[in-house]
Length: 136
Image (cartoon, rainbow, N blue to C red; front, side, top):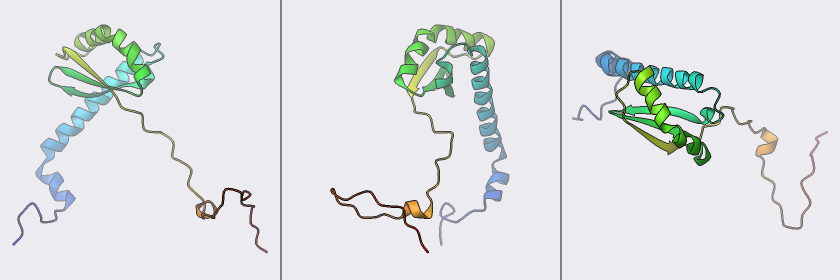
């Protein structure tokens, strides 16, 4: 007989059995989302703010992701002011900020390849580019 961990489970049953943990996870995600919205609104005049996002809150540490190392430089310069803002405006007992580079995920969907573009045509180093094929 298979153990309980290897048995397939219905997702609906999982949601029914653990509503507190899922509810807590959703509440945490909403809280971090509100922090990011507030961060963007409060620091909107700073050109680097669009490259910064609060990723997590761990005990007394705010984890911040930046899209590049270049965005990390002004954030480090404003680290004390940002920590003061987190403590006083949002009443979070944070005493540290951890900054990591995490490149942004593109927000646009890459164009799909057409059936013609998917065809691979063999080419040699001296060959001319493939010509557009027409069918009659």
